[in-house]
Image (cartoon, rainbow, N blue to C red):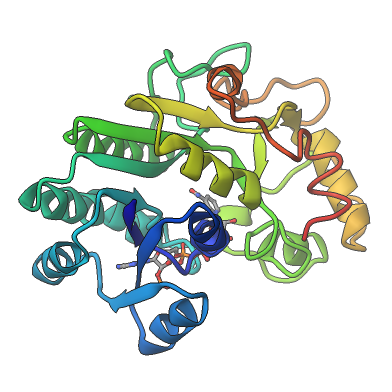
Length: 295
Ligand SMILES: NC(=O)c1ccc[n+]([C@@H]2O[C@H](COP(=O)([O-])OP(=O)(O)OC[C@H]3O[C@@H](n4cnc5c(N)ncnc54)[C@H](OP(=O)(O)O)[C@@H]3O)[C@@H](O)[C@H]2O)c1
């Protein structure tokens, strides 16, 4: 299959490229800078320099690639700037789908997140609604995700992968990443200011398992699918283990620790649907993946 990989140099994109090549696909990947283009060519794929916020340039790039399918792995998170990321999710997705429609591409696999669901008492399944009425700042993030998913769905064969918190090389949870830095007492970005060992439940997934899901999803029916490991966990359980692994002091429980309930949306997600389609995480739990062998 000819694949247009938007965001080939990102945390998932980099791990995805070798899997696509192993699968016999022809890949055209995007990067915004010449150094990124050079890095992608060194991985053995075609590369095109393009900014997804430039609609005309993106349309030309997709037309020239003549793809059978698009993979949307665009995020703008390296600067921990929620507004920039929201803009890319809205406008970048709009431009990508317009470019796809202009050349008659009907299949896309888009990257979404698994922590945008409404509140509940158990890990969320895909049939539950997104938390569109959430107050800011969460509401802004959920709104951008909902827009990304809705625009992606304009293509008849759109699969949306709702990933858990990504860990592994190049992610915020890598030993050299910002979460470990925050645990060691170094300055934390705005997204990390509330890193507390409380009852908030998250689902994790290793970047390699997320990348494998993208390849599998090329054959899946349209719709959203959670891509998470088997063990949603409370911060009071996983944070101390991560701290010990990266040589940081154990975080002290927050005021909202132990007995106090988390926000209702902090519930994790279920991977039952993905498993029913044949995908399963090689790192079934953050306990063995996140903490012991993050690479
Ligand atoms: N998935 C989530 O929602 C989520 C949530 C919390 C934290 N995180 C963390 O976020 C980090 C993501 O890092 P990352 O390395 O993937 O970096 P990133 O800065 O988020 O970039 C991801 C990809 O998007 C591309 N991109 C960004 N803006 C673009 C634009 N305007 N036009 C075209 N392409 C654009 C980048 O291209 P270039 O190669 O040109 O830079 C790159 O390929 C990870 O550490 C992860 O742990 C993710």
